[in-house]
Image (tube, rainbow, N blue to C red; front, side, top):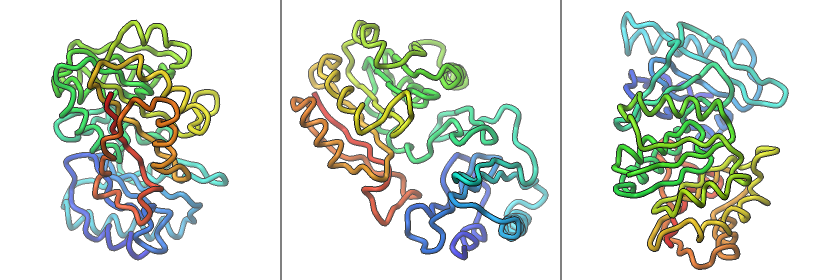
Length: 301
């Protein structure tokens, strides 16, 4: 746990949402279970193994001592989350969480909910993917599949997209996505379809063709999407949705599935799409085994 304690000892007040310590990347032996994130004004510490109260007390002391130095007079707000089969919990350990919790990233603002569920409303490892979309979206009609809280839609419109179609079967996530747009001064240009993607192809196709398609599914979500059997079904549909020269952003966050899996599936399902590059992950998410980390691939029609 020493590497985590060392990272805490270097903490500085954060002005944007970001990862601070990434034990999951395997670059800090003995700390593989830990992740520390800034969702200002709250710190979120996550463990992927059960943790005893004595360990939490040591971490609280370290955070409190550092915060007293780094931000004198400011309250320490921190949340602990455990994600393990035998111990799944989220706990406010000190301070408070804003009732309406808004964080920023590269000029965009997002609603988050760090005390509710395992997903907080913004996936920090996708920061470079969002930046790429912002840079590619100008003048494009964009399709955002598995839109979740529509962060890609926000940055696409900030980048000059003429229209974004967001599709996700979670009505709750889409409701947050709809709030994220006016939060960024975006009054129009986005539509929101709270539907199962595989049952909505007619509507999706009629809204096209698109100059940019984003595909960011869960790797395994029973009843929704299982990458090993459903990704190729989706890939087969892509050529019919795309304008000539259009780009596709394919995302996959499954440690057991590598880049070769995605590329082979695409070669079989839609060989006319050309692989261009794999986008880098944020430096904070450096991984000793990059193929276990988030994969974000760019294809061109």
